[in-house]
Length: 304
Image 1 (cartoon, helix red, strand yellow):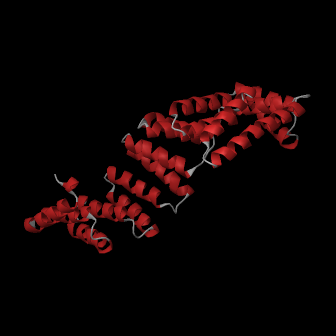
Image 2 (cartoon, rainbow, N blue to C red; image 1 turned 90 degrees about the vertical axis):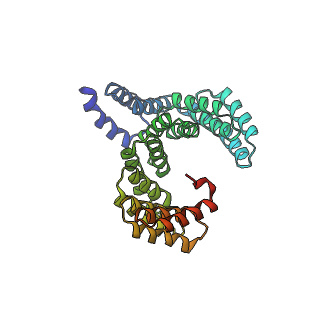
Image 3 (tube, rainbow, N blue to C red; image 1 turned 45 degrees about the vertical axis):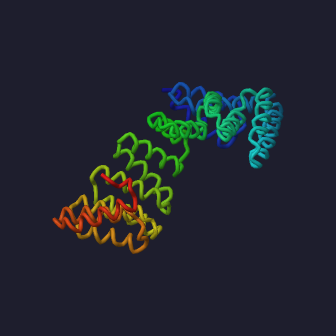
């Protein structure tokens, strides 16, 4: 209990005297005792930095680490990833606990296709700096590309918990939930993306797809219509609107939406397929067969 009470006093003191090494140590201890390991880790790091006699040494170390980081960054910008890797590995030999060097090394390993080494470096980064959001995000990306959606989702959640409120992270988290058929959670994640950036059409499209999977067709249509407003040529969104009306047995409206697609692009084969399905359900079998065959001629993969 005493640790909980001490936290606000120490935080207030450090807001006014940020270089108090002993105060940072006490705050780290308080965080540790109240179950906040990430905050504790940051506080102890600052305690080491600001402890008497450590300031100049820390500045020299920071300068040396930054030198390696800058040199590697120049190579990375030029697409010379192997050279960047060599510089970073040299820097790590000198500064093995520099989280930033391990993280950048991981990024460059991704660029050369060495995913295993990239994963190792991202994990080392997290061991050294447990709240390193971008390292969690890197691991999320790796697992997503491997189609390991459960692990990818866990790392994207960790990215958010580490303090990174990023629209794309929420979008990828939503995609993980979608792949795992956890559609309600996907809706929540996509909505979070949209709160951060309402102008990105993909987020609205993805939200609409999740609503469709939940058979919430009216919500799906609303999301797809928003995507269409952002990009009137987003024909996949228009197609999903036609499908949603088809699922609600509103066949005439489904045909109308599909015809809107064909007015913009007469080669969009799936639009003919939707029209065919709508006519079939309305009992217009000759028309249905005509549109079905037209769709199949344009795209043989649409054959039953």
